[in-house]
Image (cartoon, rainbow, N blue to C red; front, side, top):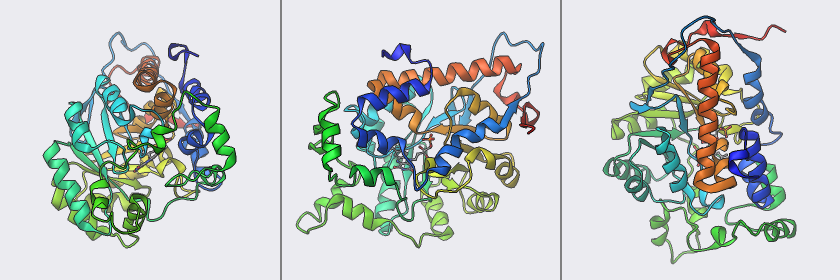
Length: 384
Ligand SMILES: Cc1cc2nc3c(=O)[nH]c(=O)nc-3n(C[C@H](O)[C@H](O)[C@H](O)COP(=O)(O)O)c2cc1C
């Protein structure tokens, strides 16, 4: 199927599933445990109905907004995803270039496979770096300094990964880090010649932003992946958020907040926003769908902070619903990864084009000609 024939994200997902070896596709597509949150993140949007205003002038539609203090062509941003080179050779650069062309913010993961400095040089558009508070606070402080030097506009602090989620699809396929492949997955790799195994095992595959740390350890038995796994700190608390906010002194969102209480605390600790997120259903299974938490979170933090609904967006109309419930913007992970796997940069382009067309068409049909005019009355919970 050609990219232009993909009518929606579901088509791109199907193309990605054909193109990738099964273990790699499952790594993108899967979630934790029974994948209840993964499914709910998407299906929860169906519980909201859109209430149109008719006979409004919708000859032009204004969609621009600001996220992390940066201009955005419409209220969408790209979430951080690690190990992107596994999905396509062109990796993070392909995604960031497509985001820039669409006037959208790109977030680079700490677990990315492209150096943050290189990405900043190649892409002029607004950029966020996704950071962790590691056991070695020096490593986190080093990232803050590097992001300042490289001109990143914001930080997203991920707080929902004190341990890795239980992704059972990855266990079945043997996709662990470093990769140890089972017989079944080796077969699947062999059957997908478009996708090159060297992308995974070759020298280019690297956690590019942290690998320098491991050079220092090279004489020891520890691998890069062991090193990073050992850096996750279960004792991180609010004081650490205060510390990071002071160090960075710029737009900072806490990613993985779910409750109004934690949202309030995030802002009180120095963050400028929150990303309501359950990590795309990859961490705590059973956590609520982000869209269902928007109203309460917005009420808790007031008008000023960024409230970003992260996860489950598969249609432009989902973004409209999230905004009417009080979100500043939405954020997507899998939707652009499906595009990337299906067709590299052009595939990401296709995903972003489809979503933005759907978004604008939905606003037009809803009778709203300015994204700032979206109001609570434009959505209601489906009457059972
Ligand atoms: C393959 C993959 C890798 C991810 N890696 C990271 C990561 O390194 N850091 C992070 O904070 N979130 C990561 N996430 C979570 C995303 O940032 C985002 O929260 C999630 O994908 C949103 O849900 P969606 O896929 O339904 O849009 C990852 C998600 C996927 C699918």
